[in-house]
Length: 378
Image 1 (tube, rainbow, N blue to C red):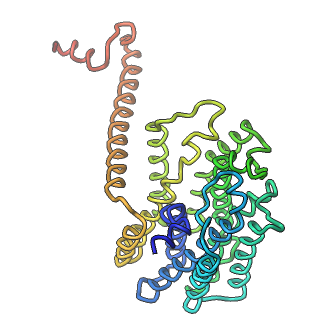
Image 2: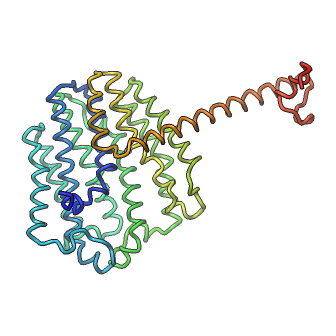
Image 3: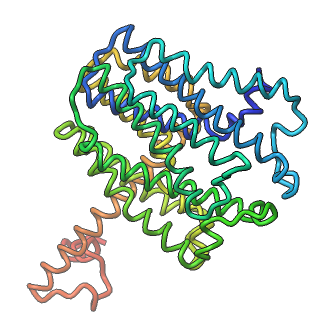
């Protein structure tokens, strides 16, 4: 089993991508006001299973058709040396995971078009012909589409159907734009990281074409726009629900903390390889799903807390690190607020004293020192 999971590169996508996709599932439960019961819990479990199937199949197909190129480039390929029978077994297993849950999940012709489109894109992207992976720009767009557009749209249609909801896809527009930006940024970063391997394999990707300067601009632009579109998307879909404001505050505080405590600060032209390029990913992958589940429990049904237990069990590998991160954020926020309030009070009182002819700057005194002097204290 461990060998199978290793071949599917589960360490690359389980705690990051799958957790991110499941956060959208939790969001749809909130949007469509799906009630907590045994059936809805099975809905979540089967959604998870089909997602695992899609991701596994995509990774396997990519590894299969990349074996020769990876050997040429000196890049690790986890299927190298695996027998054809074993590979076929892996593919059949992943396809069973893709399709079997749909015996339970609601479906329509739109569902099957999306499933078919997803699987076809996997093949077109990786197969020797047309191998869209080797087509600059188009490869980035296709990768973004099958990873960050098709699965969320499929989940949206599925959960709307389950809830017998008539919400149209256009109301999903802001979320789609946000998903595209997040997906494009992450695929683009992946291409930057793989530049040396891609060059050795004869593949030209978008970062190679546009160079460092425009890569910086593209990533900085996404970092600026991403949170704005995210908040618009959540506010549009959830509307009056306080979860919007909780998410806004959480994203703002986590982002500020990341900037202040970052060990590799942004250095001019090297933004494209700076850790700042992944600024929001810890929030999307680790904290946003938890915020949504707590929101479901607080504002909808307290029984959704059981989902928090399941999510922690499946996706949070190290609760101690999460606790430490939260503790550091609290300490940083607490000291930051204290300093901000101190400075606000100091400058406000200093300007009021100026009206009465007392210039603390000329006296080289703080507000506290001045009042101690006035009151005759040392």
